[in-house]
Image 1 (cartoon, one colour):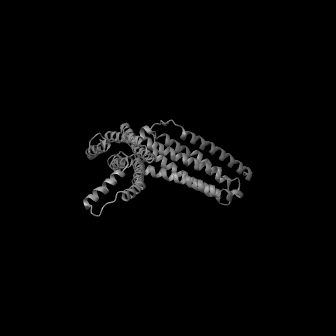
Image 2 (cartoon, helix red, strand yellow):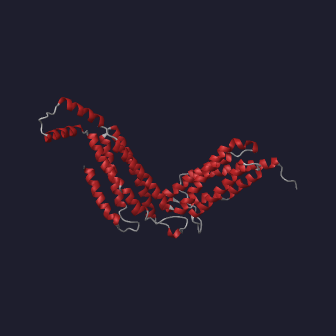
Image 3 (cartoon, helix red, strand yellow):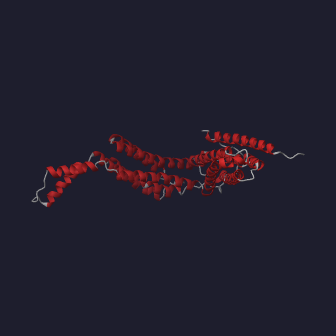
Length: 362
């Protein structure tokens, strides 16, 4: 039997490239579909363990593929073997892992995080496959593209392996902390913003030149007179800014409290768990709700700051009222722990709510 010639190997490689390209595009369409598909199989494996294993294999195969593409001698048959191995192994495994993680059982945040990472992983792999040259003469032309695409795949493979190891709780903790940091940034910007600073300086100079203070005027009267000038210079928007800051600072302290008492105490989902140990549907919905609340508070703070910068007092008041109602409602919803019992957070939450109400009514 005659051994395959070089043109045969090139043709085989092109066929393998077309085949895996079609597969990756099909996986992308499935990942981008809005419906929350759930793969129903008997005795399913732990999806995070499957996700971790498939990601490790994909990273190793991607490394091998990039080395084969960028180094001489250029061997089309070896590249074809790796591509076919990817198509028949870890790529279907990644999709299965995703479909075994419906949001109703694994939370919306975990489901969407996996969906996003796998989508970026497929984009990187598709770019890498598209960069494969026909022969060694094209190696230098694709080197940067191959390295960049490989790096994208590696990053999200590592992300999925870490997710499977640390689990849902760490993912949520990081996400809530991100929203917390954004809220702190918004507060800091408001603290540094003083709409009346120039006007106050101008008014002070004007008052000083038109209403002289006699040397014979008692010191106490001079102090009262200066204080009255300062009070007159405070605009309504500046007063509203101070009240807004007080409310946002009060909401800010919720983040570490909720992380400690609700996020870190949630039943974790990782690669070690079993279907029998999954959180209840009520717990799943509660955690998704909590994450959504922390995001909405931060977004609302940005909108309130924007209205303040525009000088729209009515919008600020309306949005502050909505934000206070939303935070109070969320705290009441999560006053009890995940087992429906009151803990230290419950007593603290009552005091927090009372303070927020004081600020809300002004």
